[in-house]
Figure 1 (cartoon, one colour):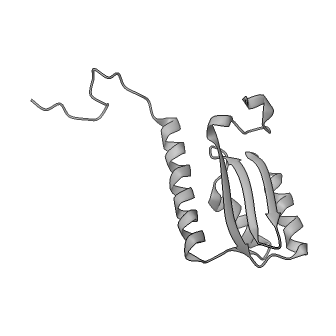
Figure 2 (tube, rainbow, N blue to C red):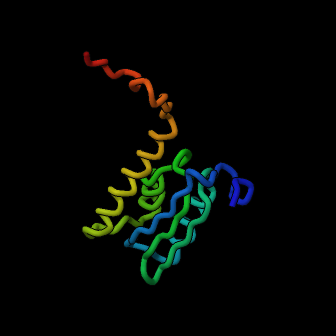
Amino acid sequence: MNDFEHRVGVTEVNLVIRKLQLKGLTEFNLAKIISEIDQTVGIESVTLDIKDGLLHIAYDVTHINLDAIKLVVVKHGAAFSEGWWNHFKEGYYNFVDQNMKDNIKHKPSCCSRPPPGSTKHK
């Protein structure tokens, strides 16, 4: 797949897929949550299963993060589940997203020289 097969603002290398449990979903807020998240730049796809309360989302980490998605969910009267597994996944997803952002900014150094900022030991 190349970048032309994705929505605007989404690149293949920065695309992540996340699944999280939500609580407080109704038919009314489900449509609003999906609509608002789907209109955000960097979102590849979003689906919400009201029966299981499961949010499936694919997004580009350079444009949006899980905290912004959480704000939209809370704004419409739902919330991320507070179970330990969901909490663990949320923390892991935030860590990976931040790591991907940091790696994009990283400038590689030549293998025969020490990295910038390191001190040379004699």
